Image (cartoon, rainbow, N blue to C red; front, side, top):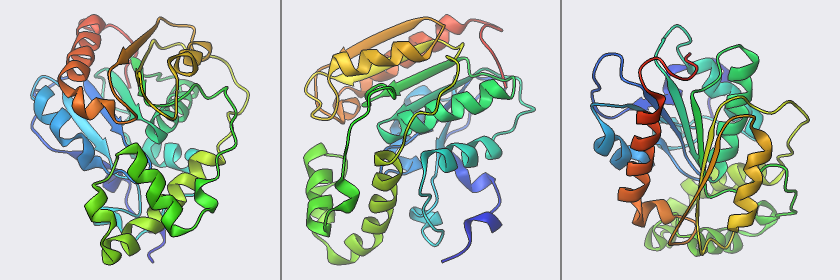
Length: 259
């Protein structure tokens, strides 16, 4: 496999639709095993008023020949390095599941650099202060596939194909290792507002666990609970997109931090 350090930073970011000049940016960070294309429909719904960019982690789709990252901090740093820090439009981060924690660590990097995001939107993940022992990454292939199937993030028929399994499993194992060994390091609260979304039947996070995200910000905090499981945002896409649109409207012209 190719050495990830030799890759140009731009492969980390994907744009699917044209946006109007000066449009606010929504940076979307996918779940474990996920790719930038997971957010294609979100981009379609919000463009051209919003510049939607999906993050493509190494090891998947057109980056499948790169070694997957083994830590959340490595993923966050890769995205940080790929951003154009000269742009002066508001940046909103939107991360789902593992992507929520990558977004959180990315927000910390941006804040430390003096360019905090305008808003951090996270979904499908408990607050990082909650410690839990998860061992999916230690299981055999069947148990990893069973976990993904239970959460509903990947078409179960695809996972029955042995060739596809050989492509997906190394990425899934690396991602699960990264998120299951992640520990929040001590640090100050973020200054940006948080919008937290969760499904009322998510087997991996309860509404009370999602509310713990409030401990991570000095800014405003809102919790939205939707019908559905871990991937509620697929079935509830219209409502989720409407909430994102409302968040962007609340920024107003020139409001919030920019990068």
